[in-house]
Length: 92
Image 1 (spheres, rainbow, N blue to C red):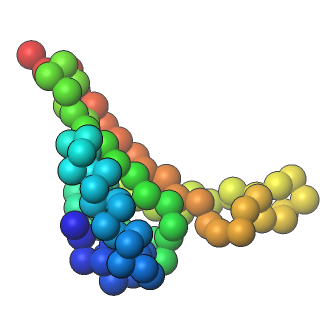
Image 2 (image 1 turned 120 degrees about the vertical axis):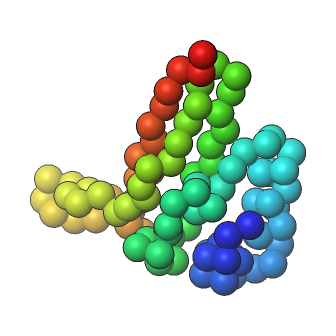
């Protein structure tokens, strides 16, 4: 589990335990273990991914996208959104 999750994202120990249980049970990887999440402090959004025998997934970048607001400029949510850029490649 990434230090960012333990310290910054999980205010309650139970949250971190549940997240880790999900990752372990599904063989998923926390995107914050693959790319830095320091540029998205205190985000509540989480990303997990898993490659398969046919497709290799790679987390490239996690960020707060610009311009995520309503036409009148108001926020669409109570927190900033985050986006994960993922590349993929067919496994031969």
